[in-house]
Length: 519
Image (cartoon, rainbow, N blue to C red):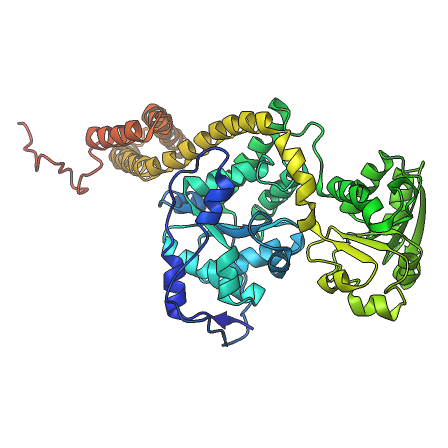
C-alpha cells in the first residue's frame, strides 16, 4: 500500500538545506549534528491511499540526460549508518541488492527527483539523489523512507542524516575510501559502491548523468586510496572482527579457550567465506555449516580443502546449535533464525554455555536471546570495541587518504561546474548551424539552377560546410570546457556570447540595434 505524509511534516523536513563545509576527520560528528530535526510538527499521519501503480519508465537518451544535468541538478544524500543508528532501525530499511533499482524507480516516480541510487549494506542505508528543487525532492525521499520502514517519525528523526552539495559528494568519497566504515579501510564497501554504480546505469537504473558520474568517480577514488596509501593493509572486516570478538570473550562467556571451542556457522555466502578465511588464520581445523541447500557449502569445501567442513541442512539446525559452543549467523533471511522461544523449545535454555554471534542485517538472532540463561548473544553493533583499536592504528593512513579524496572531490566538482557551459555551447552550435544552412541554401539554389553540380556533388558541399563549421567551433567550445574555475568559465561564457552575438533576437539585431546596409 502507498502511504501519504502530512503536509506540515513534509514541508518541515524538506526545508533542510545545504550544510557548511565538512572539515577533515569530523564527518561523523557533522552528520550527527545535521540529522533531520524539526520542532512543533504534528505526529506522522500515515493513511493508506491506493496501490502503487507500476509503470515502465522510458530510458532517457544521452542528450536528454546531458540536458537535465546542465539545468543545475544538485546532489543530496539521506540515510543512516552504524555510526548513529542502531541495528533495530537499520534493518527496517535494508534492501537486497537485486531490489535497489526497484527502490530508486519508486523514488523518482513522482517526478520530484530526477536521479536516484540506493546503497544498502549491513552497516548503512543511503539514498543518493539529484534534483533541481531540493525541497520537493527531499519530501519525496523522506516519504519513501517512512513508507519503507513503517517507523514513527520520532524514531526516524533521531537516526536520519542529510547532506547536500559538496558535503554529499565528500561523504560518498569517504564511504568509498573506507573512511566512514565501521572497519576503517575495509574493502567490501568499495565493491558495494561499485555495485551501486553498476545498478544505476542498468536499463532500469535511475542514475542519470550526474549520479552515474559521481558514483564512477567515487569508485575510482576508493581504488586510488587503497593503492596509494596503506589504509587497507592488514585491515579487518566485519567477519574478522566477529572472530576477534568471539576469541576475546570466549573464556569469559564459555570458560574455555577459543582453540578448543566447537564452531558452527549458519549461512554459506560471502560473509561465511570471509569468516572461515579468518578462522583458518587462527588454526581452525573443523567447522559445521548449516544452509538451506548444498551448493554453496560444497563450494566452500573445495575452497578450503585443509579444513574439515561438515555440511548440514536447516532441518538439523537445532541439533547443530546444541552441539556447538559458538554459532555465527550470516544469512539473508529477513526473519529471526534464533529467538528466545525457539531456544527454550529446543531445550537450550540454561544448559551448556552458548555464544551466538550475528553478523547479518536484518538480524538473524533476536534481541531476547540475551535474556536466556547461559546464552551470550552479540550483533554487529557489539563489534565497536574491537574496531576502536583498528581505527586508532590507522590515523596516519586516514589523513593521507583524505588528502587524495579531496583531490577526487575537486575533480567531480569541476566537472559539475562545467555543465553550466552546456546551454552556451548548444546556442553556439545552433546559431552556427543556422547560418551554415542559410548560406548553403542560397548557394545550392544557384548551383542547382545552372545545373553545374550533381546531387552527389551537392552532398559533398553539404559535408564540407559542416566540417568547416565544426572545426571553427572546436576551439571556442574546448576553451569553455577547460576553464580552470567557475569565475573563469563564467567570464568565457560572457565573452563568447558577446563575440558570437548569441543574445541576438534572431533577426540579425544584436545589442547595438538594427544595422544599416552600406551602399
